[in-house]
Image 1 (cartoon, helix red, strand yellow):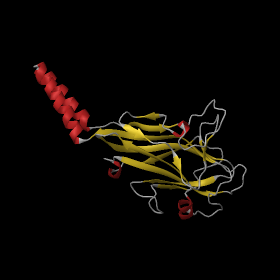
Image 2 (cartoon, helix red, strand yellow; image 1 turned 90 degrees about the vertical axis):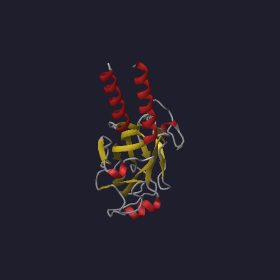
Image 3 (cartoon, rainbow, N blue to C red; image 1 turned 90 degrees about the horizontal axis):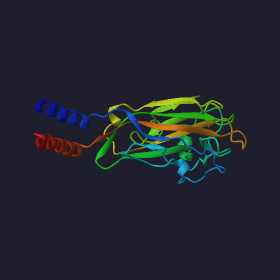
Image 4 (tube, helix red, strand yellow; image 1 turned 180 degrees about the vertical axis):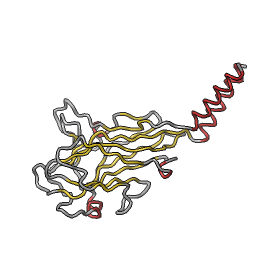
Length: 232
């Protein structure tokens, strides 16, 4: 019996210190069945669809250069037609950053926890005249030119919302976080016409683990130890 109890305590100790990759927060922009498009950044359509119980998932926002919509019956976060994102065949990431041409979201660990990230996945697409490139930034690295985790040239192709992007965040810089902001900056729009110039994302998912802080893990282990002693 005592060996069994020791094994149980050991399992609790390991469980308190080691996390397994799971969905921390996901955003599906589910507006199916709605008769109206949503333009409010505080709308439920911009909120997380799934959140780990030890994570606080903020709502999606945008920079000043993007007019965000969640379009009825499409289930995508949509940068509206004809807005001021950069035009032309030449990449201008610096200009896109200055103009605020991005979607962004922040997630945070609940009190007593930290975040160890694995990756972020999302779908991206555009209409014929939408943007062709994107850069992915985090608050860990910063939001200036050169800070991007990925610059994906020609990754956004017309009507390719099923094109899944995976951003690897498995390094030590993305462990032990209390919060993190993500931004997808759009660059090199075909043109700014008011017709068929939208860019959109969907199924934005943050994968990783919420890890108890040492003090929380110690309390959990002390409670487990007390339970084992009582059973003896």
